[in-house]
Image (cartoon, rainbow, N blue to C red):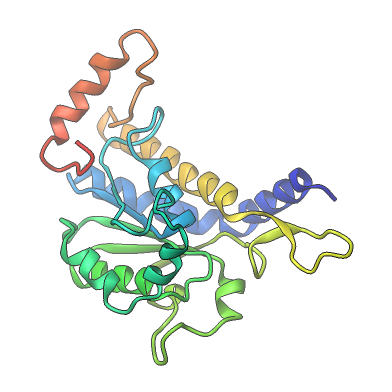
Length: 242
């Protein structure tokens, strides 16, 4: 079975098993934005790609703050530093200490294995600040490995709500004869689909409740700049990417 077949199968599994959790996440995001709170998104290394996917995005929500700390994005060189930093006890606590996240906000933390200190500490720190914490992780993968530090919980054990991306242990999908390691990672594809599903549903709920919703229009469409400027001005001073 090729990679596309495997991804389609996994997306169908996500749809069949995670619809209720995705709806709960959308409800929480919609309620936060309707009450003028914000959505924060964090992930380390490749997990952080989803934080970048959700902000300043045509068709995406305006009030989304990515948490992209130095040392944990894929443009770091050497990129192997990201693996060491995401395991560093105390780093996640410092990341939240420098964040504006507050009570009433929603925080999504993405980590496929959920075992490293930075993701767990960011989630714990967000909860301590009064945010509602959503974990995007693989419960099967995370359950198969021990936390990096003795006595530390895993991400799915500290979140208020868990979105299970159903990634297999090791993340990759395709077996090749004679090769021990599978190829074709799954979590970016399924994670992006899941989080965009949450955003689309939250936008629908906000529109239903308020008659409008803070969504970006493509800047390459006529009228896009004016549409987007209205919302950027509404949130100016609260968006970390401006």
